[in-house]
Length: 272
Image (cartoon, rainbow, N blue to C red; front, side):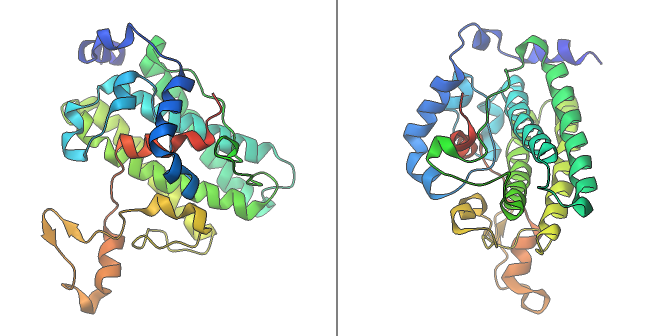
């Protein structure tokens, strides 16, 4: 199928007639989420249209709040971030141990492919790549990301875990677009494999356990909500005490992040 024509048919063309700057959009986000952003390191990015910046949605209502173009640009910005992060890591002499370079080199290849795919699909409606600061400078942080391998690993885990939750949170917006949902899920599953691999490289389980993590305290916000034990309207708490209990329940389900939740913390790594 012709994906460009498909997107043209589904998108709201009026949305793209008035464009605001990326800085303006993220400045608005900062005003809403400044306190939260300073309390926890964020790990995802979002598209910059007015419609996206204003979106506050649950997974069940996402289809009524964001267009396919919004969602693909949301995904593209996240992929830009991950691609640049891993490219800078691979280009930094002495940062990544030789034993781990094959892993991050492969992850980088995946992220490059994701960027190229999404940018091609969006064509002239693709957003420009933001300028990133992986020290967290826009939020007043001074992370030694490319001078300290444990910090690099911690950010990698954070980016990947949040990327999985961010893709999951937008599934509802693509529920009526079979082809786009398929493409997004193909990327989502690969991001989940990245997350599992990096977590194991840090000595953790390959999956998230509640809202617990071994990252520095400033990173804890990315796991907010992962302690949930209610699935499909059923509270599973206490039902599997002989099989790992509530901890095992939280490990069995990843919780989605809404676009608004991602937006609220995104600007920590965005310069412009």
